[in-house]
Each structure stands twice: as structure tokens, then as C-alpha cells.
Image (cartoon, rainbow, N blue to C red; front, side, top):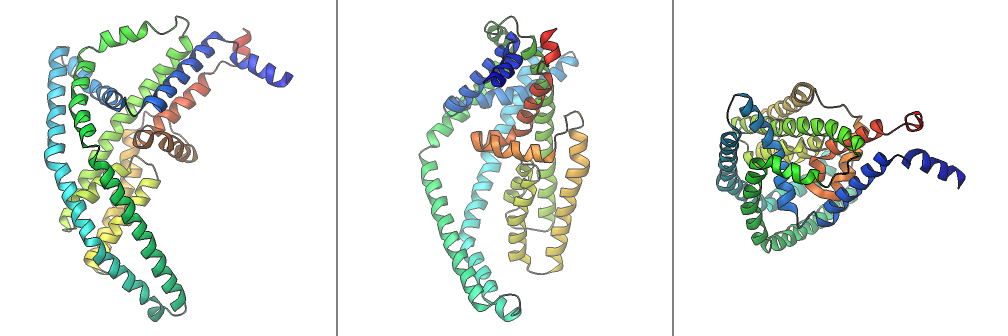
Length: 352
């Protein structure tokens, strides 16, 4: 008990530490317990945070802030309309086409598995092939039932999605327009002795800003280049697969591996073992290599480097808690944790 008591006093006798811990607990509690009902607000905060950098750059060009906000907001709404009325309908259409083609893909795949004992008798036996066929069929049946249940449940959330689409742009506009007033209002609730919290926030703010902006640019560049590649090869479901590839960069290391599976399967079923299939996979691999070795170092040169193990743990932990947004902000949140550890008052600092 004496060891725990001395450790507690050594690390938590600083009032600034108590303030920091209290604010973190409140923040995480709000996100965990109120994240779903407050999702339009939280999403608006993210979008406003992202668009603020564009507004600031326009202000540096001597554009009045209100004009900069209006211009950025109009571009944001135009992009949102483009996604809603063009990209999303195409994605839905390609998803429905893919679902309709699944039985054909399934029968082709099962036929390939059944012929494995004939083609490779020393590698797999007839019993193993039959067992593998049964397992694949049952797993795909379960997957189809899950997809159906998700589709049915999503039907009932159409109204909430509509509310989300309407509220989010309105909130984004007022957050950009009244940024100073909102910050001033929130500052009233921050204790005066919060130097530690403010210093950590300054570092985290810079890291998150660089990361979010860089990630959005990376998603757009990787998705666009991949889409151009798929169109050149006339690959089916090109927009759907390119969109998956773009968003796969949100999950470092794991995302690229996962999205390669559907791309390889669709390519195989369309082209078979042909030179087109080989060149498509090789070209796709080149894009992934350029993304990891050229684009990412260029975009994230100002972001603290984290160990791959720390990144994977952050993705698993925060993604498990907050889903998509947890995955999206896994690296910034891990950076925040690292900043807190680095800024935590040491024993000699506390006693001085």
C-alpha cells in the first residue's frame, strides 16, 4: 500500500495533472456514452476543423474571413451534393450488381476447389476439398444473412441519415462563421491553472491538423489513381473498388492487405489467369508501394512517427470503441497519448 500511495502522490499531487485527467475523463465519457446521439455534432466538428485550414489560407491571401467562410462552405456543399447525387448512387448500383454476381462467383470458386484434388493430388485430398467446400458455403450463407439483416436495419435509419445530412452542413457553417465566439464560450469552463492541458493541446492540435489534412489528401489521390488504373483495364466495379482502396489508407498496414483480396478476386473472375490479370495486380502493387514509400512520407513529414506496433494497437483499440471515427483518428489519438506521456510532470519537476 505504501508503494501505491507514494506512486499516486508522486504522479497526481500536481493540480495541473488533476485538471488534465478530469478533462480527459469528461471528454471520453461524452464520446463513449453520447457519441451516437451527438454524431452530427461531432462529425461537424471534424469537418469544420478540416475546413478551417482552407479558411485560414484564404485569410492569408487578404480575403475577409466571412467571405472565406462562404467560399469554403459553398465548395463543401458542392462536393457533398456531388457525392450524394453522383458517387453514392453509382456505388449503390455497383454493390447491387456485385451481390447479383455473387452466386456466379461462388459457383466458379467452388468448382475450382472441387478440381484441386485432380490438379494437385499430392497437395489436397478429395475429403479436404469437400470439407473446404462445405465450410466456404456455410460461411458465405452466414455472411449473406448478416448482410440482409444490416440492409433491413439500415432501412429504418434512413430518416436519421436524412437528419444527419441536413444538420451537418448547417453546424459546419456556424462553427466556421462563429469560431471565435464558440472558443471564447468554451474557454469559460476551462480552469485557470491549465498550462499542462493547453501545452498538450497545442502539440496535439498541430499533429491532428496535419494528420487529418494529409489523410484526406491521401484518400483522394490513392482513390483517384486507382480508379484511373481500373478504368484503363476496364475492371468491373471500378468506382466501388477504388473507393475501398482510397479508404483503406485509414487503417495502416492492415487496410491495404484487406482491400487487395476483393480486388484480386474480381480481377481473377473477370480475366482469369491471363496477362491482364497479372499486369493489373502488378500495377496495383506499384500504387501501394508509391503510397507507402513516397506519398505518405511527403504528406506526413510533420507528424510524429509512431512504431508500427503502436499504430496497430491504436487502430484495434480506438476502432473497437468508436468504429469508423476511431479508426480514422487512431493515429492522432495515439499521438495524444504519446504527448501526454512526454509532457507528464517528472518527479524532479514536481518537487521543484
